[in-house]
Length: 208
Ligand SMILES: C[S@@+](CC[C@H](N)C(=O)[O-])C[C@H]1O[C@@H](n2cnc3c(N)ncnc32)[C@H](O)[C@@H]1O
Image (cartoon, rainbow, N blue to C red; front, side, top):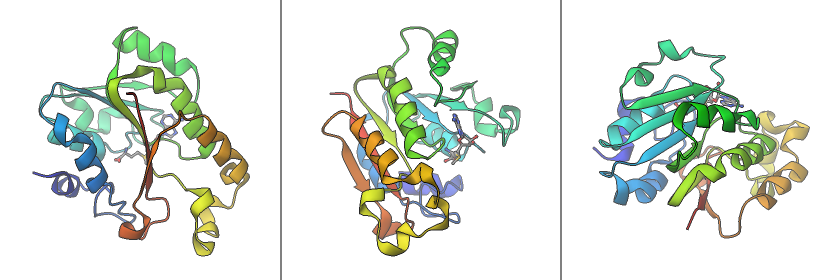
């Protein structure tokens, strides 16, 4: 099954279903395809009901799938994907530096992930802190992917008036600080046109 159908079969809004279908299947198919059958490690911050963790289990038959969440909305025992023997999780706040201690206690000091996806808290400052805390765990040749970014410097007039971003946390000041924290050469995937959703935007930072 391709990525689009896997997201669809799991009810994941990373594809074409849900209230806000993000249309990320094309991005992820191109980023992941060549490594699909490898015994990779993939970590996603933000588990919620586990539809994306189930999608990674389905897409990568030989991968170990990791997750970090604060679990205030759905407890881990109620998330079916987390019961899979290839799935591993910890309760941690990715924006707090203590996440490093928790990662290393659970998965070892030398743990590296081929892919890290940030689908946790989506403010620019949270994105920056999550990146600063977890970037060191990306394996050589791997990538860090940050989802659901509001590209403050590129929004249309209507997008900039969206109710979700009428808070100081989404100011261009904090967005600029986030972009400045990233290494040069990051890749931006703008899926807003395809999806019609204003935060359908991914930044990929490769560890080349
Ligand atoms: C959008 S949902 C994740 C959806 C999931 N990735 C999927 O596609 O099915 C966001 C999740 O991030 C978690 N979260 C919010 N702030 C967080 C933080 N600071 N650290 C870790 N997880 C966080 C929430 O508890 C929630 O489960």
